[in-house]
Structure formats: C-alpha cells, structure tokens
Length: 512
Image (cartoon, rainbow, N blue to C red; front, side, top):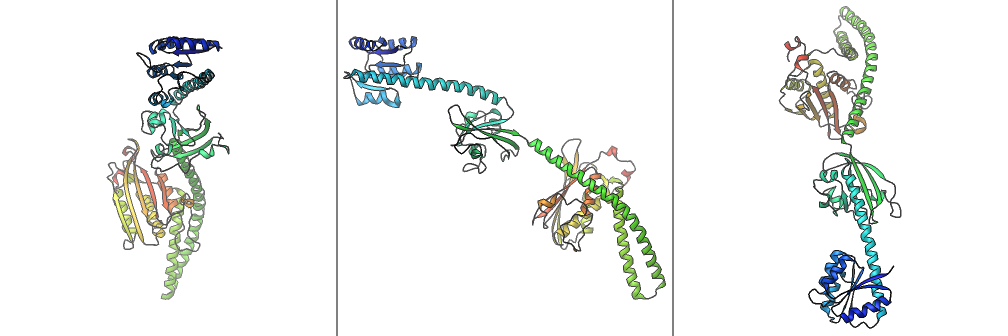
C-alpha cells in the first residue's frame, strides 16, 4: 500500500524539493502553500501524517494543526521550520499536539524519513484504539440499553479502585440520582453504602477473583440495605470490561416481599406445629382429667367422712389442708378439661383499658412491681370472651413476674392498628424487665409445658403461655414474643376487631 503525505509550506521551492524526495521513497505526495488550502485538501482526502511549516501567511501551522485534529484527532503533525525558538517549540509540543518539531534545513533526510514512518505507526495505533473504543462504546450502549430496561438493579465497579463505572436506571433512581453519570468514578462504598470511611468489610472482590487476579466464579449473597431497609439477593461476577479492566458486575434483586412471605410461612408452620401439639396434648389431657376427677371425688368424699367422724381439732386441721389440696387439684383438672374441650367462647363488648387495669390490680403486687400503662383510643367496638382474655393477661403477668424474680418493671401498651379498612386490630404489648429468653428458646415458649426453670423449682411449669396461644388463636388473632437476654421480654397480642354485625344480638347486652 502506497504511503501518503501532505506537505504544507509557503515556499514552493521547499514543497517541490520534498515532493520529489518523498516520491522517490514511494510516497504519494500532495502539497499546499498555506493552512487554508491544506484544510480543504485534508477534508477531501485524509492523511495520517502532515509535514508542515509553522510560520505562514494567513493561518500559521499551529492553528492549522488544531483544525486538522478536529477533523481527525489521530493525525500526526511534524513541524519543520526555519524560525526555531523555545516559544514555537512549546506551542507545538504542548499536550503532545505535534508528533515532532524540527529545524530547517534538514541535515539528514534518512532521519526525516524515519520520523515520518514513526508518525505513521503512531497514527495506525491510535486509529485502531479509536475504532476499538467506538466499537466498545456501541456495545456498551447496547448493554446499558438492555440493563436500563431490567427491573433488576445492576452496577459495574472497578475491582482495584472501587470506582463505580456504571449503574442502571433502577439502581440510579434507588440511590436518589437522575443520571448514572452523576455518580460515575465515585467509590462504590461512598454511594451504595453511605457513611463508610473505606471499603466494606463484606466486600466480595476477593471472592470473585482467582489467585492471579483474573475473573473467578460468581458469588451470590443477601444484603439488607441501610438506606431503604430492604432485602436484596445479589450476584457478583468478575468480568473483563471493554477497556481490559477487571470489573465487578453486580445484579441486585429486591427480595423484601419474598423474605416477608418466608417469615410468614415459617410463622404459619410454627403455628401449625404448636396447634398439633396442643391438639394431641388436649386429647390426652381430657382423658386423664376425667379419670383424675373421679379419683379426686372419691378422695374428697372420704376426707369429708373423716371430718364428720373425728372431733379432734388438730386432726381436723390436717383434714382441712388435705381437702384444700384436693380442691386445687380439681381446679387444675378443670383447666385441663377446658383446654381439651377448646373453651367455648362467649364474646361480649369489652373495654380493654378497664380489663387490663383490673388485671394489674388483681394479679400484680404493685409494691414490688412498677407498672406503666399507655392506651390509644379505640374507635371501634371490640368483642371477645372476657374470661378467656382475663386468663391470657393473668398468665402473661405470671410469667413476667417469675422472670423478674418478683420485682421489676412492666410496661403495657394498647394501640389501634389499621392496615386496611377491612382489617382493624387491637395490639396489646406487655413488656417486662426480666431475665429475657435466648433466641434458641424463643420459638418454644408457647409449647405445652416448655420451661427453662430448673427441675424442682416451685415456680409454675404448666400451660400458661400455651393457654394464651390457644385462646388468642381461637379469637382469630396472633401472639408472639420479642426478647433480649438480661434485658427483658415483650409479649405482643394482635386481636381482630370483629364486625358488629357478626356478633350475636344477645351478646351485645353484656359489657364489661
């Protein structure tokens, strides 16, 4: 392929001489006597190298060079001038605008030929890079077009500098920006994880690179964002970017709803499991309680006969104590029968505030236990079984009192929850300052006869919270606990506010 060269000089003698010399070397030469003509020739036929004088009438070589660079940024300019000066050299070589700066006359033409050849090689290299960059940019535009249409959040970050290279529309808007270029080149840990002073401790860069720093296997993980408090499933993959950098391509899918569904499903499974345990225990307890009652009736009858036939006061005291013990056993037996039969509910209109205050006065020693009460106005009428609800509150108080060793603080709150027009609820929270419950045991506290108390403890180990769970569940509500060891436990009760039309008219006549 024939080499081409544009020679620009306002002295015809010089242009003609160079034309002959370069054509003898196999070049195809065009000449111009000033900058304007050179530009017009260049527009019609682009050259990789231009050999030009600096000092010319009308437009000097430096001005011409800037115009040619606007047409083709890769063109290489070699200046050849008889007016050499430091200022000229500074102007033409500043920012590498010119390839070379030589003085006239040329002493060695071979040196000039070599410079022209080197300039052509540089032009070819830069042209290839420019073409590759343009191709990469087109591919990048295609990729970003696809990424921007996706609901998944996508980001690209340099694995070495942590600089963000790109974020798609979904992520850009989630971070509070209108255009991804606003955050381009900023550190990912400054933008995505605000408030950090350095790379994240959980950064996955090392996990997605092999021992040589090349792309390795993808890494999948879950992340809870401190910015919007939502959960994301993230897949990070190291890839070679179009500029040969190794970057991290991350995709983040919002799984907040899925996490919530999983939580509710686990909660439902736990409820089913507890319900089955209670059902099995209820069947067993009912059978045992009926036989136990028959035995207790026989014991009471014999104690009463002994009381009638024995005048000794001391013995009467023992018989009376025995009778009281049997009656306590009958009470427990009755609870077991009620537990087994499912407590037939008689719902009446209830004032929750009054119910709780009465329970506090009856079941808590307020000299030893400080109690606070926060009540929110309930705009709707609330119907429930009064005795069963009293039993729930009593059992929770009893557990709290034992957890605090008989002394401490209990805070009670009643709130009105309305998630939708059809789903209003009353929320009752009872928070104690007791020893708390470990995470391992928290899910088991509503299991029948579950206890962390040591064997031989005089404290209750019965069905208290199991009773509460069964009663609240039968009312269509839910009961759950939050606890921190050595700080205390909060029992939450959510009860639906039944539609007034669903309540029997006879039950409306009863109020607390």
